[in-house]
Length: 330
Image 1: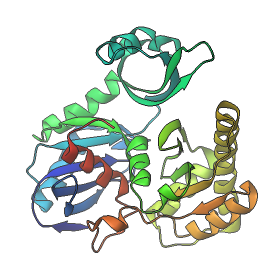
Image 2: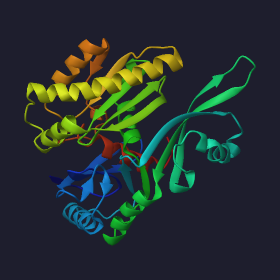
Image 3: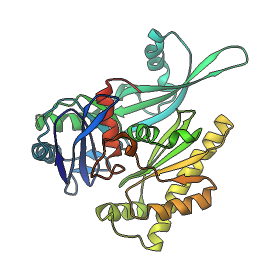
Image 4: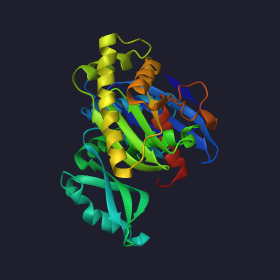
């Protein structure tokens, strides 16, 4: 699938099925979707979000960029796999110029593998004041193994394509949900994303990230996801649908329990993001089980940048490209 107009900021993601890109031009306030496209990957090139065959991945990148005529070096890659670690942490509030050093010194307490093996970043969330006046800042730690990142970088280098930034695909989708036209109607939102290899949850509390988690599908549920992402128009059989429901209900229960205990508040709504043809059935069943309103937002529909495409399918790419247009950290 290919569509091309001009050049600008590019968001790119890759899973075991395909590479997707979206290119934006214009300004941060008036972005224009100028190009979008995808290219299918043969089995084994990318496995569960990790590059296994660098040469073949580079060749696919080259082909996709050639067909779309993409030339910009302002490219943000979104990644999500078992080598990406998301952890919520809480740190004492310090002056802005000391935040990074403090987090880097204390992050190991929250990360299960040596910090030296990771590229580590963070997203500041809300502040909490204790009775004694001490203020803590809730923080999302984002770590990615250096060797996994290196394989992506090597592939882009072989394709002679400049890579500007690497970001969490889970967080990019969270930004997409945050920017959707109806997320602001609720206070506490749980964004649930179902992809070919994994299920991700992000909880927003008063527009701040309170939880971010991604779990890889396994067994029957993974086979179902691979089957229906290869043929997204097909409807699932009842046993296949049950396998998916079991996976996502477990994740929802875990996220809701964590949030309720930590924040002593309830989830107001769930936003389900998926391109599966059974999305409405999944949403209906999830609403009945969780007793929480479940919506299927059309991400970016209100931004006048999505014409002729499935905005949900390219939501992560668009969000990554927006990050490039902004040139800021969110």
